Length: 269
Image: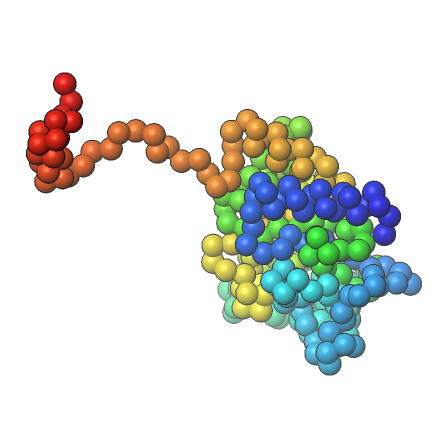
């Protein structure tokens, strides 16, 4: 890894740490193409641990344990994620909505439409999803992802719009947030606000107060500048709530204070 990339990763991690303060590690995510070597030190669960991890689980481990993880076709036991990331081509049973009907949709028509609109890579385009904490990554990410509460995600939205203005647009189906976090961000080449799905909550341990924010690596310098600029402008985290007014105490408190002031000669003139 060259020094310029290492410095950029450190700068971004520092800005997010100081100005957003997420509870878990911000993540560097890279899709590994066929023939591309995995970054040094990355754990592949099926090879190094004899286990099979799905994508949202791997993201959870990376952001909570601080491990660098790569999962591919032999690891991902969730067929929906495996199809979305192009490790398997979809089949008729999947496309018919078999996995969604009754659980997420009332009938085959709705379920088939839900699956059809999942963000997907072309089958075979990539071999692995590689994810690592931003401050430990030794590769150039395609996507940076940060989990936080709604105020922290709001600050990242502010940062992404600081130089460009406008608005962000994101889509969600309430499931397969791994695809929305990574594939949606890469294919649209724009920052995204992501709602953790049920699977991420069950297997990735996403908490009820958490959302996620993802952006292409090319936005890194803009995000740093945007966080710094909006912070300087007074939009900060923790949120600077309105606290600078004289509060009203209960009547009994007022009576005690009045007696104290009269006794000690400190009453208001």
